[in-house]
Image 1 (cartoon, rainbow, N blue to C red):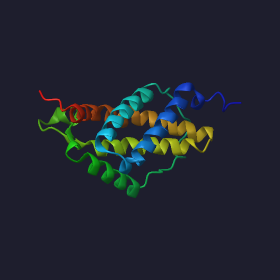
Image 2: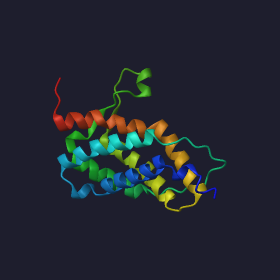
Image 3: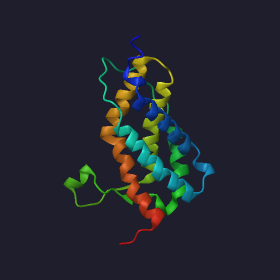
Length: 173
């Protein structure tokens, strides 16, 4: 009876699980895509993923440590290579706002491929943990996901959007 009342079964969480699964499937299919189509779909996925992530309910957990990492270094490196190869010259961009910029006048460079792989890693670990169907694991996975949204992957979603917009529409000031 307690499992049905868990925050893990709310509409917002169930919708996020669906979006996260679609995002991960999309990233895993990078090799089969054309560059422009990939960038257009990525632009939409990042926007939707950010929106759904911002709607996730907060959760407090009693204890943690039950989660495992499902994204290996080899998988991460392979996806990174696929994305960076596909995006080529459109992969690199300067962060619009990075906390470190408060302490230096140098812009911070990064890549869409790195940000996408970091987002993927968070979402894939979440959905794989969620598949266990055990409330305690699902709640911990949701707690980790929500904290990482606030501290990293939410920002990574929005950081990529200006670079994608520029690449897609060739905006020139």
